[in-house]
Image 1: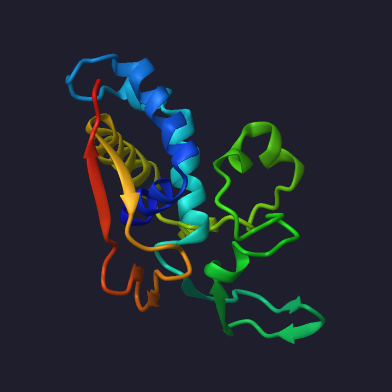
Image 2: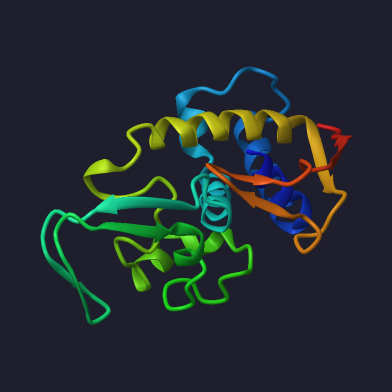
Length: 186
């Protein structure tokens, strides 16, 4: 969630589009978001997906091969542990042109179809052992981020280059993320 707020703070033009989307859903109301409201937040969902592409919660995970396979011309016997580095996969220009750019619109349906590979986007892992809570996680994040953006404009204290990353068990910001919140007039 902090990464999403950070990227929106760095891209005020995208943040403004999200504000417009949220305003069109809620108007001036302060009522809690309903499931229908959350479903209508299509741009915010694309922003969250793009954030997870750039900063996957788990940057590296392992899987054990269940059968002999050939990967990149190498024989990998069954029972071998294979490391998957989602952080690097998500920056592969073959699947994500201009991969370092924050571009939520790359998740528009018409754009995802053109460069799709079933394992190019794996913020929640993939296959039979993927995260069973991924839909809930996105709904929860939409709910919280939208509630912040309903009330505030966000600016960042640091640039992406200045914001250091720590990849331990999860991808987290070194020394936190410093944001400025400015109350919005709704």
